[in-house]
Figure 1 (cartoon, rainbow, N blue to C red):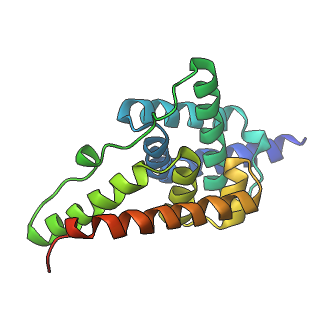
Figure 2: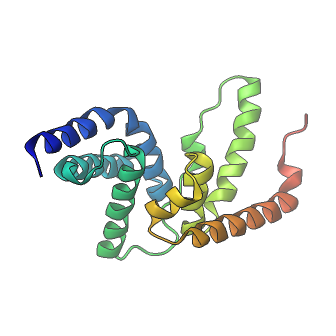
Length: 177
């Protein structure tokens, strides 16, 4: 590989990473539920992206590439620590801050939705975050999660169905208008 090509790739990664830090941190929070662990995941992701910048294809979406790296690091961490099932949830009470009546009502509803999303299995939670939270296409989310597109579609359908059932059971919790 030509030196100029490697330096072009490094430059693309170095300049592209800073604007993505908030997105990567949010994804880290979805996976871990822990701000400190999310920070560590982002740092490890940035380090790996810089170390392997020659693998990045300029002109492609850096966010997808870094989401894939972050997901891989997290899965490796889970395997190495043999984390029990059920961890990796965002505490909606900490994640959302209320300010003002309108924002408070919005945040109450958002908290309820987040709590319902937290109850989804991890695969469904990840698919919901990537497709609905970050706006990735099904194909892009499938690449990040390293699963077939049909699996993403199936996880989203199952999540929608489960969330609709939760909504029907919890309608009395919604704030009055």
